[in-house]
Length: 517
Image (cartoon, rainbow, N blue to C red; front, side, top):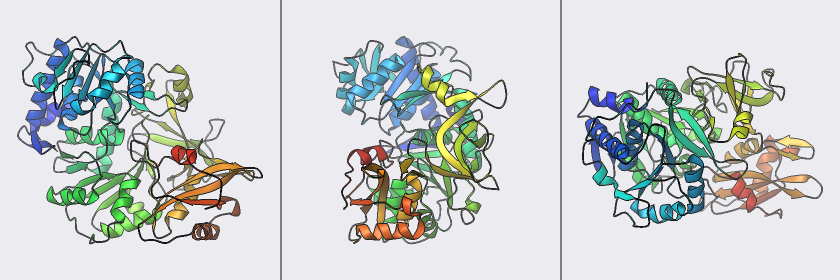
């Protein structure tokens, strides 16, 4: 099965059902199928060939959804890029992917035009939401491209082992890496996730996560797969308005990341049980602190909370069944259906239960590699237990309990060595998050003449809360070994974040000073 069949089959099953609500408009599945067909025809008419890459430099808009399925129907490979990306990075992605086409929006078309100055592969551009800028390459209005049906039947698009998408993720070298996912990969991941979330056509999923972020992207794909309605919002900048929308649209599924959950928990006037239609909340990108999990459960008593862990290279690795939250609140669960995961040492052999090692994943959702980057691919995909396969080394440290449940310890490159001991920043952060009033925290290593690296906690607190450095140190000293207690504490109004809304330790560390707060 190919991914564009999600929209075709939902249109056949329920053509007049609303499949997308975005930008004040409602689109039935028949609308989405027709508009994406028209776009596919326009792309082929402009010379797009099977396997060509198309950059979607767009925000969370209905045009983005049509763009995804239109590119796939044309036999292309779509590549979503966050619209806040600057011209230099966009130019790198355009060049590295050897993109044939660029679909963008008028409001960011200036950045796109600047990026195209350093690119030769793009043959044409489509621009939504306004007049195309003349400096863009062979520009056409997106709206005009979706008005007219294809003049000839669409040619054969391909098979399920063809690439469906390239998603660029941060690289250790400073240059992003293009994760190659086939239709087979995407279908396997979407099928597994919708199975344990128990998604059906009756679901209404509200997504504020960037579609350029795979967690947000899969909300689009999974809703289309099961025939659910997707309510697409641009951001979580106004949490109260989003929660009002959850209530008004009778939303049943709400995907969150930890920073969004933190904002929800700051709302003092939310009443427990105020969202009776909300069937589940999911979280990934980073593990929720156990203290936040409990507060969310208190606030949404009739809602299942799925704590999950994943990475772009396979979309999703694990999930914790909601009935296990009370038993093991610090766990990110078990491998998703149809996959396997285990913890290995430096020698690649599985370590005993309870010991820390690197998580490896095997399954049909594992990427094919990094685009045009054999060295990075060889580090991530290595021979597995059977001769015919390669498995994904995640670069993340985990431990496994006696029942097989997994616990995230930290990134291999996040581990801080101080006093000769290895410290996981995540473990210290979880303790600090239990302190009332702490909104965000990142623990980093700062240079120290005696220790080599000293631990520093950078903390953002809720408005009106009074906390001092000694409060943070005291809490850590009461729960952690002495070498894990931060030597320095700094308070900030907010912590820097990545494009996907995660607190960025790298950016925090770049601004961290060693002096005591």
